[in-house]
Length: 185
Image (cartoon, rainbow, N blue to C red; front, side, top):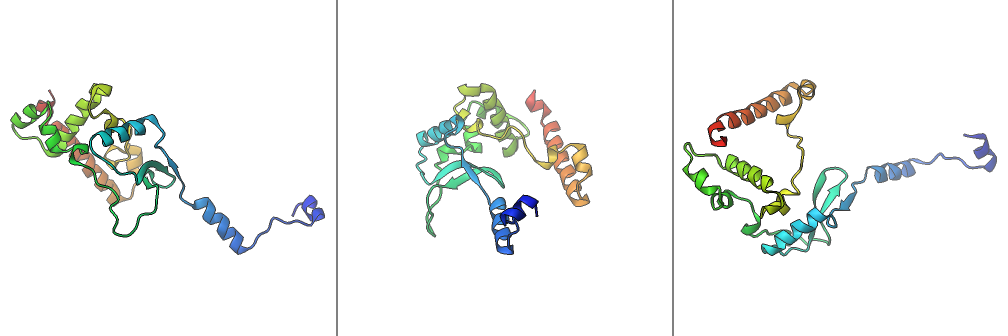
């Protein structure tokens, strides 16, 4: 105890309950709405133009998990939380019905659905704001924490099983890329 505190008769010592409350407050999950940011305003407008009508949810940044959706009101048991019309979903049908569909359908051997979606996203990202899907693409993460993209230094400190899984994932990505080089050309 500090001499000044002793003279005032105050001490900063608190009981177990106060320490627990303070610890709980400091580790509580916090969220901040992202709905005011331009990219999310554009995304919501894009979704509403395509038939999405939910007002329950808003984009948010959570202190523990990052970006996501949060409710703006209490949800009752059994209540529908979200329902997206198919026109809001980027599916293989979307890709096959696009300007790329002819190339993808006629390519032999057939491209996997995952690769078709990836190629579509890359092409649409190149179109920038001229893309119909720009509001969606604009909110996609710019970096990833997928183990396939971990640096060798990070892989070296992972537990053996996790390292093996990450290396298998990295090899699968390389294989998908190398086996489709002709299509990319």
